[in-house]
Length: 254
Length: 254
DNA sequence: CGTGCATTTGAGAAGAATCAATGCCCGTGG
DNA sequence: CCACGGGCATTGATTCTTCTCAAATGCACG
Image 1 (cartoon, rainbow over the protein chains, first blue to last red):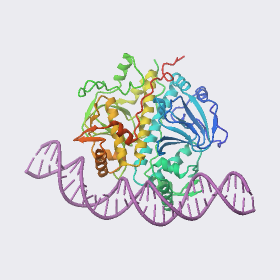
Image 2 (tube, rainbow over the protein chains, first blue to last red):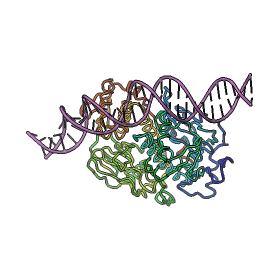
Image 3 (tube, each protein chain N blue to C red):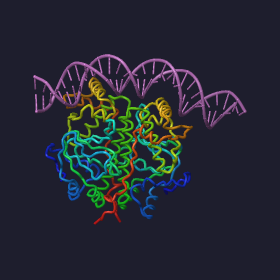
Image 4 (cartoon, protein in one colour):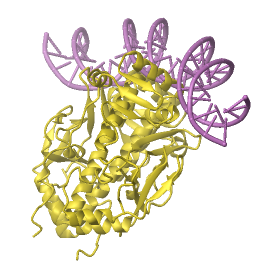
């Protein structure tokens, strides 16, 4: 069920996030593809899953962008993750009695629902799948650590530059960006909710890093002009995955 | 090897974090206790494990407080987690080629080293252990989501109140706090590095929430005076764990 | 009874929020 | 085809929060 939605270029592979840590056999790949229900198309701004409800499933984002956010009564919210094509969504709240965050479509999205039971069945019967899910949960913790470090940082311009680099790298990995260019479908309101700053200041910070010659905007297109100095300015670290996981997989199950 | 260090009151159980999601058989408990090496005692400020080194192990914190932090050349740092007794430390970086964060002793600590191989062996041979580790990684993601939401929030006083509530709840769960009181061994510098604010402002924010009647300080002792209004003020949410994980554990491994 | 570290307090500067007005793009309907 | 409206982005002016720098106080420990 989890096939390419047909809209993306050939390089996109909806399961790329699953294969980051473990390479699967063809039959395992087939089982992973069978995890999700029939893909659903939702328009921008749809609530995919609310916060404070009982968790019953995960979602795979097959196309488009989505957000995880924690929302307050007064309308404030913190976006805790921008999900890109291939991402598994909704897993953190599976540990809780009630979901902690809302999943919202930032663009038109194609998502596939994964019932917890089906996930659990694969987790229990396929140790390599369990290992991959454990490692990708740890990788998501690192992503949150970096998000927290970004937001705790003093200057807004740094925060914004760091976000742009993060998105560029993740889009590249998903096959949705190349040559330092990508399309950014976020409003400045949404960017503000990611970085914890006001919309007005997002606009000013964009101008600031543009004036510094770090990147250029043209409509919704972003072009990073100088990756090296942008990384230094944003104090941004690339975080390559470990290359070997012998310690976790392919143990003798005696 | 992972026994009570002898210093804590009888209620403390160094494996309480492992048992949050799955109840283990006595023989499984024995295997989990055998995970760690002989406990080591380290003084305050010791670096337990540096950032930007190759990950080779996890750690269990048996006694004392420790921090995970991301550090920059100029001395700035973001503390991304305060570890309390019972916590498993260092797991996020296991997915990376180089560790993302440093582990530092905030007080005198007792830690036990868990080589990755020994962890992986148990993960592969004990599906219930693998499930517990997957769920606790997801729970840690929620903790980071809450930390990010806290730091992204506008007012410093709110951030501080939220941190105090978080620590109180976690200390209670570890059996290290009761009756709305606990001992806080953090300097205001460290609190500032958790919340992304300056030391001076930590002092002022403490005064502010004290003047509001939310809590009282006496030396390093903190007493929460009004849990209800403190929670409202800090917009803090208790996050109870789900009660059933049938979907993940005890599947037929045919 | 110093000495060093942490905290508190004050004053001024910088950064970001808020409020408000304007401009721009795009789709809709007259 | 053009006028209109809505959503989003930009810019200016002002206010508020927080930072920085500096000094003073308090506190623990030898």
